[in-house]
Each structure stands twice: as C-alpha cells, then as structure tokens.
Amino acid sequence: MRILILAITVFICTSCVAQDPYVVLKSERFTVELAETQDKQALGLMFRDTLPEDHGMLFLFPAEGMRSFWMRNTRIPLDIFYFDDELKLVSVSENARPCRTRNCPAYPSTGPAKYVLELNAGKAQELGVRPGDLLELHLD
Image (tube, rainbow, N blue to C red; front, side, top):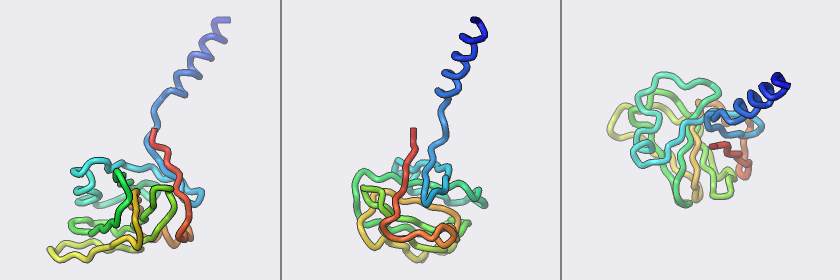
C-alpha cells in the first residue's frame, strides 16, 4: 500500500513540474523565450551568438497591429513570423540578416499581427509555412 501511495504521489508531483514555454508550428515544437515587456521586446535576441535549432523568441503584444522588426545588434540570421490574434500566420520575413550599422533595414508584417515568432533563418522554408498556418501556444 505504501508503494502505491508513493507512486501516486510521485506521479502527481512530476506532472506539476513547470515546463518551459513552447510553441508548435507545422507539428514542430520550439522552446521559446517570452518577450512580454517593452524592455524585453526592445532587446529581443540582440548580442547573442547562437540560438539552438529548436528554440526561438515569442513576442506577445496586447493587441493586433502592424509590426516591424529590425536586426540591429542581432548576430544571428532569423526568420520572423507574424501571427494575428487568431494565431494564423500573416507573413514571414525570411533570412533577416544581422545588422551592425545605424541604418538597418526594417522587416514589416504584411498585415496586423499580435504575436511574432523569431526562429533561426531557414526554418520557414524547412517547415514549408504558408499564410493561414496556425501557431499553437503552450505558455503555462
């Protein structure tokens, strides 16, 4: 009986352990760092030399709007995915290049977006994403 109670307790405790937030796009899972504040959004992935293949950054905005990102002080080429409030893909800026000057190009969405996902460059092509593809959020 003690073993059964111990087993149930262990099961309950392990299912309560918090997971890192992640998203699923085209059946592929990516652990994400959340950029929920203006400070985190301004910093983004700047000054990082690497990003694991199955990781990214998810920017969460309070409402839909036209979004535009740039790559100033970002050292990693990225694909930038823009999603609306229904988590449908609006557009992608593929292979946004690192920029170390003051006049970096902008990478705007083609429509209003509430969520922006940054992944390593090449992921959009690898996954074969298309406008309307859905993003799954697992942030708890």
